[in-house]
Length: 131
Image (cartoon, rainbow, N blue to C red; front, side, top):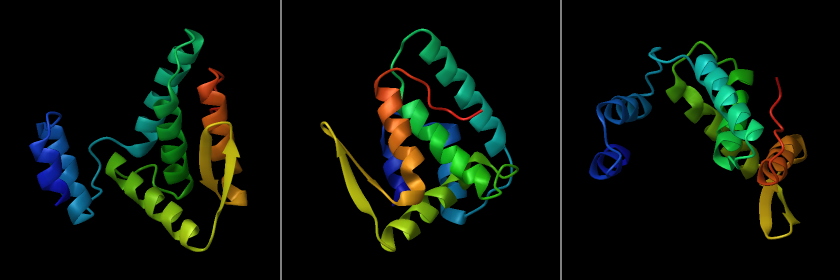
């Protein structure tokens, strides 16, 4: 189903088809190393922050790729980031609490306080990215 949805959209490309297949097959043979994607993401987010451009999705991606790196996936293909999502899901199943800050609600566990701070900082144009 994932491949069908991605292929049907306007953003379908040769790259999205390959990566979708890798996700389905859980094949994380390196084409673009996760650690390199994290570095590129940080450089782009830093450039956006330096120019005062809000980039909350870049910050969210940075956090997710950083979690994947912390799981030891830095040398795997960037598609292995799905394992960080799975780890978040597993933590969420064990119970989390919701915090509210203005109109933003973020479900976090105590160990995910950084995710909350990342969201808050990026909304107000301050880079929370760890180096």
